[in-house]
Length: 243
Image (cartoon, rainbow, N blue to C red; front, side, top):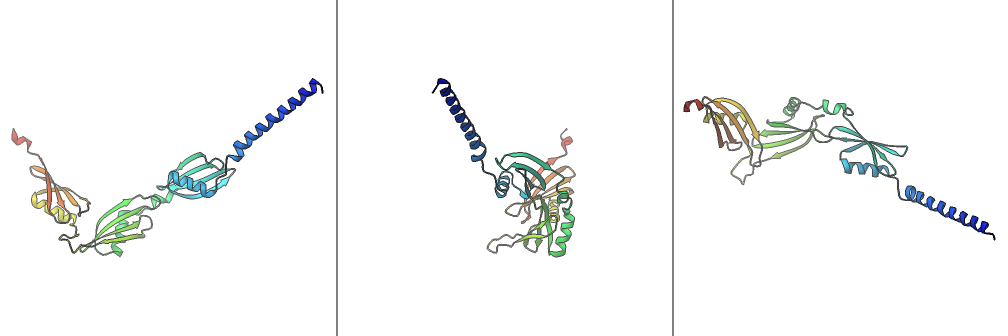
């Protein structure tokens, strides 16, 4: 066997070895090391990362197109089915045109409550909960305080909870109305009532009533259950009298 033949054989062996090594690298990187995501895995991955709920998911050309609703907004994701990488994220403010425009007003909620519930409305507050905006309505019925949760769009009653007085305690859960709190404050200082604000607390809460008197402004903190004046903050207006 000549040196030329030996050299050619060695060259062929080297080329085969290099080719096999390159094929192994490509196979290892692009085929064996990746596993295609399933629809369930892609959906779970997005909700774990961003919360909300998946409204739709579609696979096309090795890409998952996923729409997620969170806080009344829609987010569109494009995810690589092979690597799980997020290729694109788009926020669509106009994707839910009816989510906010159909929310009932407090007046509409009040009318629904008064048509189906007894007692008087103590407070109405709106909560922009994800996927389900709600109104929290507190109703005073004799000595009971009922909390009603209503769907802000449909008006459906989602839950009701009634707090009854504890007969073993000396106090009652009956809460004063804002008008009663105002009259208590006016009995302490004659003047014009600027505002009445209720602050909730575990013991029944309290009212803040500001009165503009002839020579001073005072803010009265009145316990919402007992009617006791808890504190008075005064702001004198007669600074000219000191001259």
